[in-house]
Length: 141
Image (cartoon, rainbow, N blue to C red; front, side, top):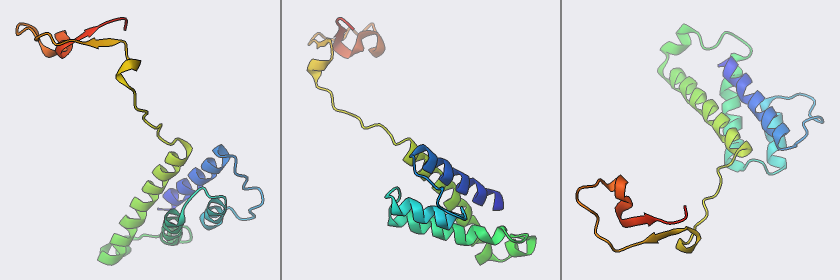
């Protein structure tokens, strides 16, 4: 879990770098401090802000001692907390990737923008669908 905490922190730093958000004025680049900066500049919302804090509170336990131990994992509540922290950390990394590379919006195209003609001819029964384009004849494609 200590390694995951370091990965999340590094992903946060890379995200800030890619988005041209300076972390130079932050003395101690802990997750909580980077999270504060990201929220302040509007990079993350309240929900994500709280998730970073929640992840950090669980993941930081492993930064200062050998956690989780085999004995820790035998406790059902502790084991579920560890798994929740793990899943949250991996999800936060995907959220950061989304911030850096948001999906492109799909624009609606009208039929006049395509150079095809739709005919009303019957599809020959001796040809498969992909061979006939289901009645769509290619024109100037």
